[in-house]
Each structure stands twice: as structure tokens, then as C-alpha cells.
Image (cartoon, rainbow, N blue to C red; front, top):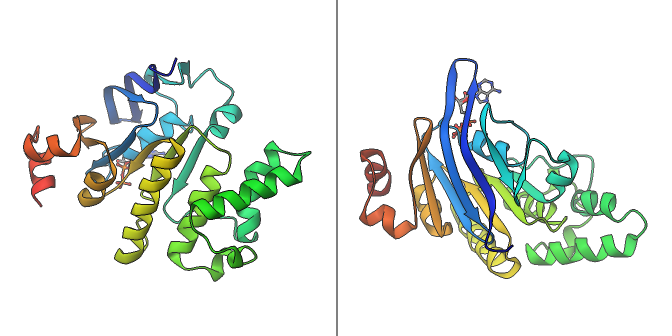
Length: 243
Ligand SMILES: Nc1ncnc2c1ncn2[C@@H]1O[C@H](COP(=O)(O)OP(=O)(O)OP(=O)(O)O)[C@@H](O)[C@H]1O
């Protein structure tokens, strides 16, 4: 049912050895939401994201994606439905732009090259990559162009969920603003559910219809940007939005 959360954390705990990173985190994200996640360095943001796509498993509690416990579903099927874009992008250096974006569609449409061709063309248009760049290799692109390829590649399997881990961290301010506007437009047009980690409070408040603030093993505030500004739940949040 569309009213059910697309992502749900049910009393999730996660530790690395003696380091309790997440303690009793419960959280529901509805289909189509744009959630930004911000918090101090090392507070567990990336851990939270990797629990969604099954790269990590919870020690206690459970994570559900589309109603299914992530620890029991086929990991390949799960990850096809979840795009993952990270800072530095992780593009395949030996593949040109076209083949980087075509990677997953090629796996999905083995018998149908035309379908893959259409998908790559579409996603290059969506992220506004000039078709003339299709044969360039990652080393021949600007930081912003690489980031666009990373987003196109993450979207090319038409996932329901897009996880983004500081995707715009390594670009200049002007490029960053352009990419922020693009991701807002893509979210509006494609209806994909986005969970987006950032260090930048301005970015968190601009992009998220909902902002999660993490501190010391858990979520200290979870609300729309206006609520963070008008009613910061802790001194940490007040400092964050005031700074
Ligand atoms: N594989 C691991 N083994 C041991 N400790 C880890 C591992 N991965 C992360 N940690 C630790 O867990 C904590 C949370 O890490 P995580 O990457 O989730 O934080 P983060 O909020 O994304 O940090 P940052 O904003 O600096 O990227 C950190 O203290 C980190 O050092």
C-alpha cells in the first residue's frame, strides 16, 4: 500500500566493537519524501544509510524496505531498487560516461540493447549532461560533471529509493548550488524517495522536506526545516541552525 512507509527502522542498534554507533533508532520514511540527515562527524550517518541498502546489518531491531526485512531479502534485488550516490562518486575509471551509466541497465536488459540505449539517453538528459560527454572518461570530467554521472548512474535502474552520502561535498559553491537545484527538480519530477547525508546545514534545510539531526547514537530532532529553526530540540540543534 502506498500509505505504508517505504523505509522503516524498528528499534535499531548498531555497534562496531565497543563503539555503540546507533542506539534504539526508530524511524519511518514515506514514499516520495526527501529526507536530509545531518550531524557531527562520526555520529553514524553513513551507518544509517548502509543499514537501508543492506551493506550493514543491525545488531538489534530490524530495518524494513517496502515492508520487507532487509536482512531476509535477496540483496541483489534490494540494491537494484536502491540507488547509491557517494562523494567522489566511485565511477569506473576505465569506462566512459556512457558505459558507466549503462552498467546497471545492461545487466537488467541483457537482451534489449535499445532499451539500455534509451535509458542512458534519458538519464543523461535528466541530470543535464551534454551528450558530447558520452565518450569521455571520468578523468576527463570536471567535479560537477562527475557528480552528474554518479547521479545518473544511481538513477539508471529506476530505483524507488536514492541514497546519497555527501554527494556534493567535493565541488565548488556554484556547482554545488546547481546540483542542489537539479536534485530538487529530479525529486519533484521522478517521485523517487531520497535520503541525503550532508555536513552543510544550509544544504540540509534547503533540500529536505524533513531533516534528521543525529547526535550521540541517535536522532535528536526529526522535522521540517521550519521546525528546526523555530523549535530546536537541543542545544546542539540550536547551534547548528544558528551557525
Ligand atoms: N567498519 C567499521 N569498523 C569500526 N568502526 C567503524 C566502522 N565504520 C564506521 N565506524 C565508526 O562508527 C562511527 C560512525 O561512522 P559513520 O561513518 O556512520 O559516521 P558518519 O556520521 O557518517 O561520519 P562522517 O560525517 O565523518 O562521514 C565512527 O566513529 C566510525 O569511526
